[in-house]
Image (tube, rainbow, N blue to C red):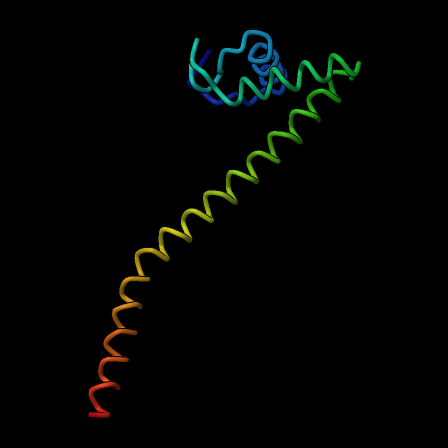
Length: 108
């Protein structure tokens, strides 16, 4: 569609609806696989099957999008913590080895 961010709610709704129908990503471009398009289509299908109104369908989509965002952020933070830990753990292990070696030498 467009590279600019939408500010009009009607245009946002139209873009989301089109993404759900076509499976094309509004964000990644035409004919590109997108988790956003998959989520929009899934929520559209569930809403249609359950007979939800348009507003309820958008609430369903917003809820699941926020849940996925929260889980992705949690995974990203966990990965960052593990990466930082790996950076400093070798140094801590070396300090521990040198400290124990020094105490072992003092006893001789």
